[in-house]
Structures are given as C-alpha cells and as structure tokens.
Image (spheres, rainbow, N blue to C red):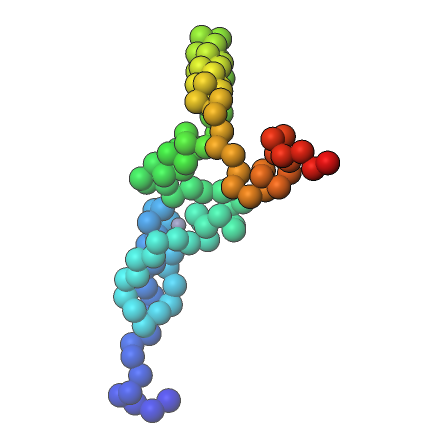
Length: 115
Ligand SMILES: [Zn+2]
C-alpha cells in the first residue's frame, strides 16, 4: 500500500433514525442514516406508513363513505319538482311552431281539392 494517499480506516458508528447503532469499519467517522435493517419494512415484514400530513385519512374520508341516501322528504320534493317542471313544459308547448317545409309537405291542404 502506498503511504500517504489512503484515508484512515477505523471503526465508525452508524446511527439510524430508529435508534439502532452499528459499529463498522469505515473511513467516515459517524454516519446517520434514515433507515436500516432493523426498521426497513423489507426486513421487518411490517408495512409502515409515513403519513405525517394525514393525507391518507383525508382520502379515505372523502371516498370511503357512501353518500347518505336521500330522505323521503327529499324524494317527495324532487318528485314534486319534476312534476311541476313537466307541467310547465306542457303548458308552454301547446302551440308548437310548424316545421317550415316538412310539415307543409306532409299535410295536404284541405281547401284545395285535387279532383
Ligand atoms: Zn433503523
């Protein structure tokens, strides 16, 4: 080994966010890691949710609960509204404008006898 070019290799302490501490040989003295074999889901077999903002709950709240079924009162109100609308439509429709040419062609004029 050439002298003076290699970093110093010594025992280093690796600290994980979960609290686990490992001592390994390294050129770095202290290393802080966010995840390790003691806490990674792959090794623990447990699923871990990192839901800090409550987004999962928000999503579930929004989409899991079905909308409340309409009450009898609401159904009756809707039926009344539909009936009123139909009546209004019928009232406004009694004098439909005759279609310009198709209607004239289809209905022969009674005033002009052909024979
Ligand atoms: Zn860990």
